[in-house]
Structures are given as structure tokens and as C-alpha cells.
Image 1 (tube, rainbow, N blue to C red):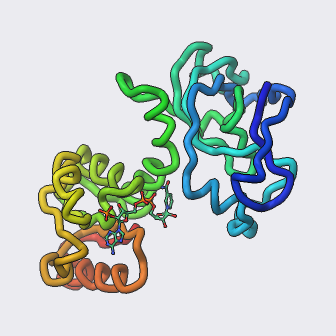
Image 2 (image 1 turned 90 degrees about the vertical axis):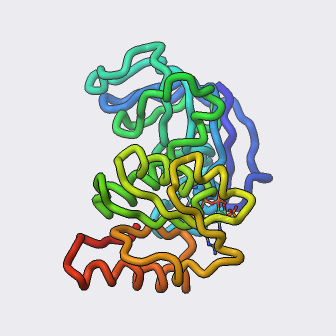
Image 3 (image 1 turned 180 degrees about the vertical axis):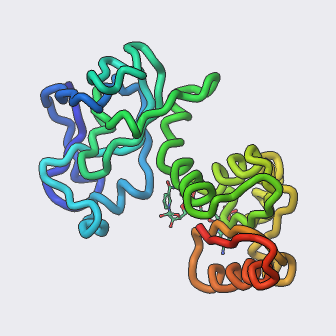
Length: 240
Ligand SMILES: NC(=O)c1ccc[n+]([C@@H]2O[C@H](COP(=O)([O-])OP(=O)(O)OC[C@H]3O[C@@H](n4cnc5c(N)ncnc54)[C@H](OP(=O)(O)O)[C@@H]3O)[C@@H](O)[C@H]2O)c1
């Protein structure tokens, strides 16, 4: 099969498409015929070497983490997946391999592709939506009836977070630039603050959860908005 690989840390320009063997499938793994793959900020950081302390790469390294496709074969202990299932998946970053004709992914990193969404679009979901899910529900334990402040709500992580939070029955207050306000409202935010012209610190009070991917002052001011709620003893507070 063909796979895009690099032989040293660098950038995407160093990638070469090479002929390599189709990877072996372990018992807990799934072999996926890749229909589409997406480039995530994580890929750029990985191949630049910036995440070496967390994800040390071995070379040659097969590029790519996020993909969508059809199951070719499932390992003996991954029988939930059947040949022909349409799936999205996030390869182990250390192993990579999404920018190839076939990819092997641990079964725990595979999910059914959303019905009705073209696989070329669905391939953009795994890391961005997975990050939003982890932050909102695994870290912050967001629940129905709570209010969540989501920064950068028009971005990859933020746009997924708005939809997931809304589906979970939370009230969403979001920040985005004015040009993206309608989009973010359509995704499920009940209130959108233009971070370029408005001061969210004066407009937001008593949120239960903050999802901040901006950092710096935005994070400090956000945590203060949530802290008021915590000090009142009304709700559990966490920041994603
Ligand atoms: N994408 C992922 O899967 C992923 C996973 C883990 C971590 N991250 C990290 O999370 C961060 C964001 O990633 P992303 O992919 O979501 O970015 P993105 O798609 O490039 O979106 C970034 C968004 O940030 C907004 N923004 C910029 N300055 C802002 C401010 N001061 N206040 C509020 N919003 C502001 C912009 O809003 P407007 O367009 O409305 O101006 C833009 O939509 C990056 O540091 C990335 O490395 C990303």
C-alpha cells in the first residue's frame, strides 16, 4: 500500500509517499481502508518534534492521526467491528499511519461514522470532537441544566463542544468573532459574545464549567467567573 512517511522531525514538506506493507492487525485492533484523512494541529506539532516528551516518534514515521473509512478486518478481541462498517478513528499518535491506504487503529479509538455525513467531512472529527468530549464530560463532568462558557466556539474544538454541550442539555455561552456569531448560535449557543469588541468578563457570571483553549488572561478571567459559583457552593466547577 502507499503511505506518507517522514524520516526525521521537520514539516509536512518532508513527507514522501512510499510503498509499505499493509500493517498487521493485533487482537484489540481494527484494520481500516482509509477513505479520507485530515490534518490536525496535533500532526504539525508531532512532526515538528514539539511533543517529543509525550509522543516520541520512531522513524520512518507514517503520518496522520485522524481518518474515516471502512473496516477491512477486526482483531479477535475487537469483534464489535465488522468488515464494511463505516467508521471514524484516531490512530495512536506515536504510531500514526492515517495518511495511507490502510491504517491499524486500537478498537477503543474507533467509532461509527455519523450517518449522513460524508466521510471526507467526518475525517475532521476525531481529535477535535474527542478533545471537546474529554474536556466537557470526562474532565468537567458537565451535565444537563448547567451553564458552560465555551471560548473560541467557531474553531475546531469549540464548534464540536457547543454541539455536544447543547445535546447534553447544557446552556451554552460562547465567544467568537462577530462574523461567526450566527454559526455558533445555529450550533446551539444561547448567547454569543464578540471577543474582539466585547468584554466577556463584564457579561458572564456564574458559569458551572469553562472550556478555554485560548489560555493566558482569558483563562484567568474565566476561572474567576466560575469561581463565584463555586464559592456560593451551588455547583461543582471545573475547567477544560
Ligand atoms: N483541533 C484539535 O483537535 C485540537 C485538539 C487539542 C488541542 N487543540 C488546541 O486548541 C487550540 C484551538 O484549536 P482549534 O483547532 O479549535 O483552533 P481553530 O479551529 O484554529 O480555531 C481557533 C479559534 O480561536 C478563536 N479565537 C482567537 N482568539 C480568541 C480569543 N481571544 N477569544 C475567543 N476566541 C478566540 C477564533 O475565533 P474566530 O474565528 O471567531 O475569530 C478561531 O475560531 C489550539 O491551541 C490547538 O493546538 C486543538
